[in-house]
Image 1: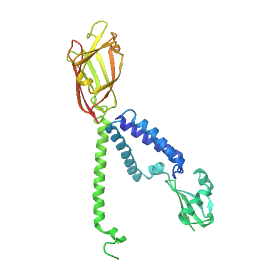
Image 2: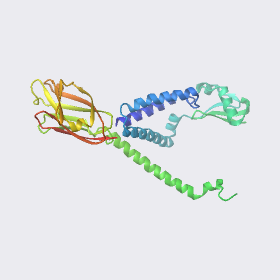
Image 3: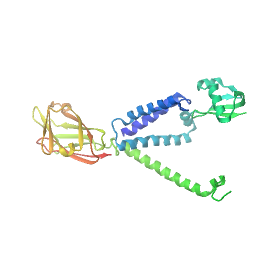
Image 4: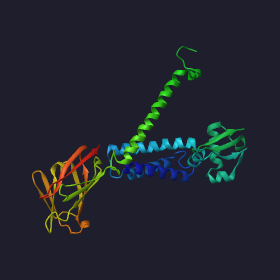
Length: 146
Length: 171
């Protein structure tokens, strides 16, 4: 029982922490983000496993984490409200070449981020060539050209 | 288009979709199995849980044992012993633990610590100084399992019938 409750608590805690950190956190992994992810996984692993290194415990933990993920995906599919809270909603950060300042500031997105996405996805050079830039739920910026 | 070359129209053919339907079915069955395993885990049938905490006592009630009958290999385990007021002499209680149990486990700690330990051929005898109140006659034995599968052994207050411990250790 302890393995399952530990796995569940860790899953929900990480879900909460990463939702509070915002969409942009760890959405595109830099070298430092990678190191940060490794430190987080190492720290969490010790708390989850405790002193029980048995195969059964490892199996139960993996089963708990994957099952919780599947369960939440089913619940999110059936409840749009819960889906919004758990996954967030896409946010328009640039409209007709103009930065939507309130949204961009809240999501810590600047013009350089949008231009980077525009160059990468559409080969665009200037903000006035963009109709919409949207910060998607997963933290990626997508661009619609004019 | 050359023979054997795939086109977008191939996606609409029924064969791949029927395979996908079978895959979805297997996936849903897998979810149900995972649910059952988690329920068993929560109840304690795959390790410690509320339904596997057990209490047994020797025939004359001189010694009672509390423990989980399902445990994990190499995980910290705990055995609580309750010695009846009538058992043992005035100043010492001698507890004998069968070698069959000790050979399959490693002792991590005993509280209160025994004042002496004697080895006999098929058992180890720990001598404790315990008080007279029920709360002072409790011994907590911390250990780890060194093997997996079924495990059994006998523990007794010397001169009294034993209490038999029986566990299943998951790998």
